[in-house]
Length: 378
Image (cartoon, rainbow, N blue to C red):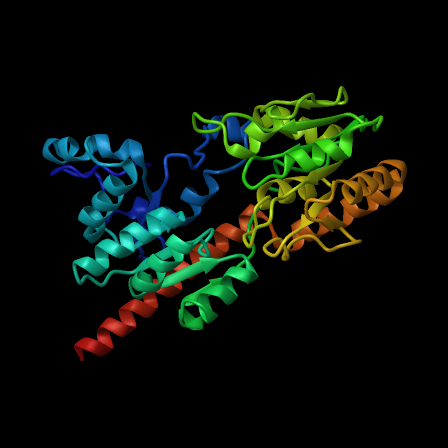
């Protein structure tokens, strides 16, 4: 569903949009994937609609702006989309009991508007990489207007408490997710390995590690949101790619097949204090695949070294090469790690668990804000 913010708005307190008596609005970036429910049902795409169905939430994204009154549409045309969406969320907020912001930029912009207007409103913010200096500086000033902050990286939780001074009780630490029903073990002959993703990837190190090996590898990376990230450009700056390595994005159903055909998955990372690579790592583990990953400060909460995968020193092609050779030449070890990884996913990292966690946090946040308001008005 999308919000219609005109004078005759379709959004109201009807039963369709009620969860435990709570009306929620979810502010998402246009890049957040929203799948065709029919393709989800036919097992062509992950079940992204589970979030909207479970929370019975209304989604506001870039396409929602076209439904605002004409005079606002004129203003929005000259503003960045993220600012326009934050303003629209602020203007329609009274139709809801809580706003859920899904991305750092969305959360910071909406919290800033609340603070600038001296407005208190229940706000649950899912935050992804809060340690970047600019984001951290803004968050330190506006976290007063975030009721609950959801984090899934222990390094970020510690950073929020120790460096930004955010009260621990305001932070909810949960595990991230993968749709374990879509990404699942599939019997295939494993004739290659793969690496997936673009953010903070160290592909030059992987390319060096693959040179001279008699192992096929596909790097599933390419143009995203209309441009090539520097991590992908680095691939094409190589004088010559080894013949056993191919590069290119693949559609979601083909990505699942790529994971299935891979004996294990490699996630080479640049130095980072965030959990970059997390989505690909969780997808691989859900498929029952071992993961070789660069050891970074931020990637600490998912892979169990020696049990579900192998950590190698960041930027070390020799160590990466040795880990690749070891798992390739010991398929039974890779298979056992894959089984343990799948088990870990089912225990802690499913999409269903994540959505239930968000739902419960939203309910708790609204109830806490209502109690606080009642005490203030008493």
